[in-house]
Every structure is written in C-alpha cells, then in structure tokens.
Length: 431
Ligand code: SPV
Ligand code: MG
Image (cartoon, rainbow, N blue to C red; front, side):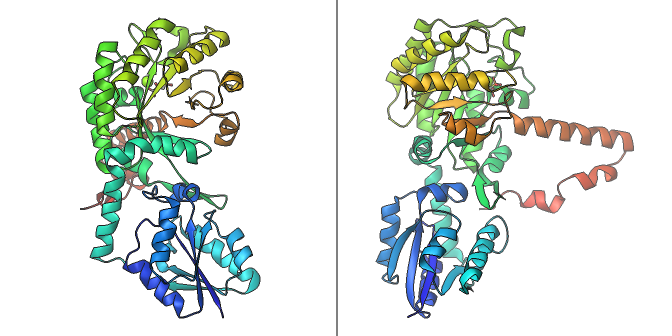
C-alpha cells in the first residue's frame, strides 16, 4: 500500500480540504500532519482552536488513516521520518512566500524519489465566506486581546512593528518573508506615541490626546487581526488612567505600556538633553495598582516602563523599580536605553532574571539596533518592538518625491521609484 502525506494548517475543514483528502484516498494510505501552533504563527493566521481540536476536525472527516503533528513549517524532518510515496497539496503555493515550502518539499522528495501531487485550489464563494469569518473572529476584541499573552507563551520572542494608520497596520498584518529557508511575519503591533504624534505633525509630548490615539487604534483594528500594544506615555493622571485602561480593554487592545515619568513628557531618545522628571516609585506603583484594579479581564496587560537608564539614574535604580512595579501588579517590564551598545540592556536582563524568571521583559532596540532577536530572546527578553522604523523609512521617501516633482515640474522622473498605480488600488481588500 502506497503512503500519501498532506499537512493541514487550518481551523475549519472546507470543501477544498475534503477535495484534497478525497483525491489522496485514490493513491493509498492517507497520513495528515496537523501543523503545530508554534509553526502556524510564523506564517499563517493565529489558530482560533487548539491543536487537539484541529486534530479532531481532521479525524472527523473519516478520510485520514493517520493523523499526526507536524512541528516545523518545512518538511525536512517529517518527510525523513515518514518517507511517503507522495505528498499532496493545493496548487496555491506556487507563488509568494509559501513557494519556499513547496521548494522544500520537492527537495526532500527528490532525496528518495517521492512525488508531489498538486490539486487545483478551491476558492469559491463558500470558502471565501469561511475565510472571512475566521479573520473576523481573530479581530474580535475577546480573541485579539488575549493573543499577546498567548504569543508570549508560544514564541521565543514576540516581534512587534510600529503602526500608526490603517495602511501601516496592513503592512504589519500581511508582510511575510522567506529568508534562510524559513518563513516569518510580525506577531504584534505597537502604536507609538512618537510616530502617532509625528504622523499628525505634532511633538511627542502627550499633546495628541487619548481620543485621537483611540481613533488611530480603531483605524488599525478595522483592517487587521494582530494584537496591539499601546504606548500609553505616562498614563496621565491615575484618575484618568483607570478609565482609559477599561476603554482599551473593551476595544480589544492587549497591553498598554506606561513610563515612569511625570510632568511634561519628552521622548526618551532625547535622554538627558532635555529636562525630564522620573516619577517616584510610590506614585508609579499606585498608578499600576489602580489600573490593574480597574480591569475586567485577565487578558489585558499593564506593562511598566523604566526610564532609569535613559535618565542616567543607574542600574540599581532600574532593578529596584522593576521589582517594585512587579509587586504593584505590573504584567511586564519595559527597560529602555539610548546607548548604541546593548550592554546595559543585557546587564539589566541578566540581573532581573536572577530573581524573576517569569515577568515578561520588553525592549525597544532603536539605538542598540545591532542586537538580533535571537540574542535578545537568549537574554530573557519576551517582546521586541521596532518602534519607529516604518515612519522613518516613509518620511524620506515622500520628501524625495516632493523634491523631484518640484525640480522637474512634472512627475515623470520620479515615477519609476513609485508603487505602480495598479498595485496601490489593489492594496486594500474589497469586501
Ligand atoms: C515611542 O515609540 O513613542 C516610544 C519609544 O515611546 S521611544 O521613542 O524610544 O521612546
Ligand atoms: Mg512614546
């Protein structure tokens, strides 16, 4: 009896999957691998049901002879173990990042003479409706909100990209790349105070108020499903903070990060070049505790950001504050630095982890940008935020375009550097 293998990474079995299984049956014994959560989140949608439930829905078709777990996106290990005569897959993986998986399968099959069978991918109205329903479910507040906590458990490090509009949200949502034979995508989104203010041509001094920040969050939420971390600046008055955390929680935001500064907040990257005052440990702890008390779910995270290294108050102060903020109820710690070298961040992580192995650590490597995600994860960091790179790349590109048009008195010269008109009008999904 010949063996035929296919891998499913789906929460719903639809006509297309049944078609593949029925086709597979014609070749022999059907083995279905269900892709593990850790692998799914690297390039696919976040699973809305558990691995066990995904296994059960495949079993329930009655069309699989064996169901097992595939741990990696790539097929090297699974094909080495099973050596099936055939692998069967829909033909929708020929282009885009998924073509890397197809090439990997072909390479592994060639090692022992296995064959790939591709069946036409089913994408009719019914399948599209199921697809839309899944996306809708992922975007719902109760599902989106808890996803950050789930990702912290699943990922070696949660990769977070700054967004400040629907369009930048779409970039964070949809960008998937293949590099070094692996697929990757961003896990979460950061609504930066710096970039949200900059997009409005305003300084980063808590001038853009909460109503406006919420408007930005809503624009992003409208077109995305990934979890959102809000840069909450100082959190404002405690009396206001308690209302704001409830609003954010209800909207489906996953976390707010508040920094231990008081008075007129300036951006941390100014460091000691401008006057900035750190809040007392006692007052900041009160704010954290009040915020935690106001929450209605266990999903939402209040993350305390420590500015001691930015304000050159020293490592001991940073560590003392970290312990106090965690004791006051903080669900995570963000430690910030404006040094080129990651050394002080690494030293903090090392010392903090000696006494606290669990509390998530967040870092924003804008200045210390030579450190890799792997190095951060090894140091015990749980969330990395690329806090301003989208804004900093878009601004010079737009400015150059404006200059070129003015210089040439027409747009022809600049056109080759621009996204084709046909592409931009197709960028947004139609309902
Ligand atoms: C932001 O993105 O607004 C931040 C991070 O708060 S930083 O600009 O580095 O202070
Ligand atoms: Mg900020």
